[in-house]
Image 1 (cartoon, one colour):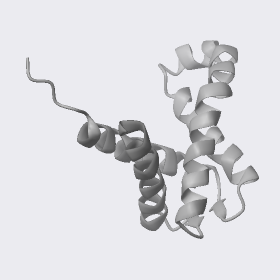
Image 2: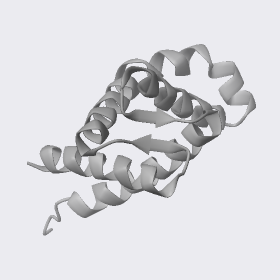
Image 3: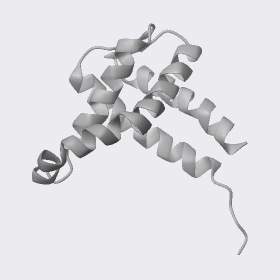
Image 4: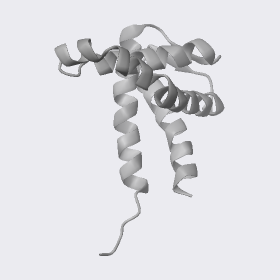
Length: 116
């Protein structure tokens, strides 16, 4: 059940982030859900390949290049989803950072408390 709730909250995160950033445009909630799913799939399948290929530059930049990879994942989703538009690299970078914060908050909210 938590997975379904997180899925819908990811869509809310995409909508909220697009609302905060003038360089990101989402037409409706269903487009936001599709974008959230594709960002998740890109992070699962494409991102690890890019991380492996960019290990030297990631080490030299002390991991900051991973932010660039996150922005590239957002731009990749922008290319495939109609109704989800990011105006440039810097907006994609800001979008990925803010969306990560929202998803962290939503994960904390949906985490079940165990009584030890």
